[in-house]
Image 1 (spheres, rainbow, N blue to C red):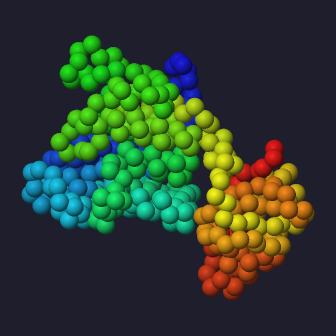
Image 2: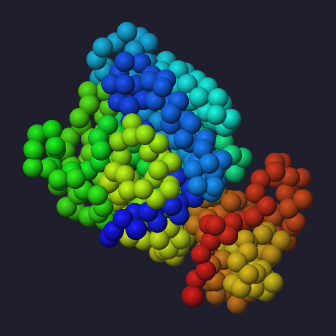
Image 3: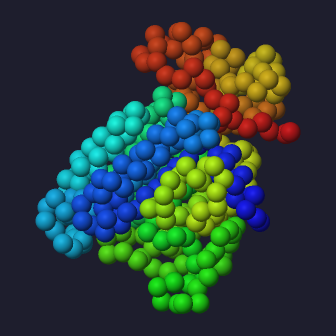
Length: 384
C-alpha cells in the first residue's frame, strides 16, 4: 500500500460520512466551538459544490456534542451517570448544536437537516429503509444531514454507545464510499504516544486487521466516550459495506478538502471489499427470505439485461408474507430465482399493485410512495 492508493481512495469517493467528536465540537467541554464548526461547515459546503476539485460530493455529518453542550448550558461540570440526566442534557444541548450547524452551513450557502437516530431505527428493516430513503433524498437535494444519536429517548438497551459506531452504521446505511473520523489525535499509533515515546504512527492499514485493536488505547477525553478502539471497530464495521475509513486530526487546516484532493493525512484503514461487491454479497447470502414476487418475461429481461429496477406493473404474483425492507426473491414465470433485493412494499400492498402502473398506487394504497417494488440499487442478480 502506498501514497497513491491513499490518494485514490479519497479522491474517488463521491459520498462521504464525516464524524466529529465531542472534544473537537465543544473544545473539551467549554461550550460549542463556533470557529471550528464554522470551518468544518465551510469545507462541507465546498465539497457539496465541488469547490475542492470541481467534483460535487454528497456529505453527511455525524456530530457529537449535544450532551456536552447541554452540560455547559445547565452548568454541570461532570458528565452525569443517570440516564434521565443524560437525556435531559442531550435535549438541552441538541438545540444549540442544530442551531450552530444550521447557521454555519447557511452562511456558506448550503441547507442542513437534523436527523436523530437510535439503534432501533437501523435494526428494524422498515425503519432502516425509511431512514435510508430520507437521507438519500436529502443528499439528492444538496442538503447536508447533521446526524446524532437520539439521546433524549435512548436507554441502555438501544444506545449505540458512541458516535464512532453511529458514523459507521450511517456509512453502511447510505453505502458511503468513505468514513472520515475527525478526532483530537493525528491518527492511529502503534501505542498511546502520550505514554509510550516509542509509539510509531500508522499511515495505512487494512480495516479489520486484528492487530489494530491491540494497538488502540482507551478514551483520552473526559467529555467524549469513544477512544481509539471505537474508531478501529467503526472502521471494521464500515468496511463491511465497502467504505474505507480515515482517522485524522479535526483541526488540521482544510483537512476534508485536502483529503479529497488526494493528500495523505491521518491514518487510512482500507476496506478490502468493494462497495458494490459488499452489498451484493450481503443480499446474495441472505438466508431469511420472507417471500417472493413472480415477474413476466418482459420484466425478467429488463432485470437481467438492462439493469432496470423492478416495477409492480411487471409483477404477476406475490408469494409469502413480508414487510417493507425485507429481502425477497424475484422469480421468473418458470419459478427460477433471477434476483433478490429489498422490498419497497409489504406483501399485502404488493398484491394490490401487481400489474398496476405507478399512477394508480395512490388511489389503491391511500398514499404515494416509491414507483419501484425493488430499486436497482437494492437488487442483485442471481446465477450470474
